[in-house]
Length: 169
Image (cartoon, rainbow, N blue to C red; front, side, top):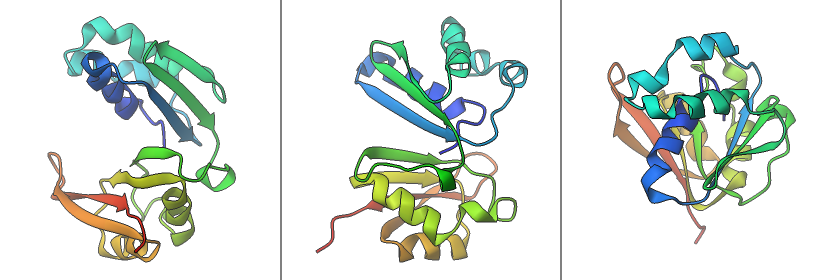
């Protein structure tokens, strides 16, 4: 959910380099970052992955609304759309990186309707992660069926939230 600066997709690609699992990465982005802005971030150097700089660039240059084979094991589909406006398949995804801006900035993305949509598109035992740990948001997530777990946050964040879609019964 949200291609943003491409950091999550790039790190997923890098993590998979040795595992060589087939990853079909789908991203939905309403407001794409410009290529110039993305390239100025220089994530390849920051992540000590200079050999993969061309991959980071390819992720950003990949066409919208179609699948691009980044490698034999990594396939990227970027949708230029709002999550509110796109149909997502039920029981399809293993993980969602929910990296939206804070609820105070994008309240429309932190509703029960949006979390229900994401819950429905996850497979059983699928995971949603977010940096948001706000109590009202956690209650909303739980109300649609997610099982919540608080995790230590990265530098600058006290905690983050991992949610799991569990089988009923």
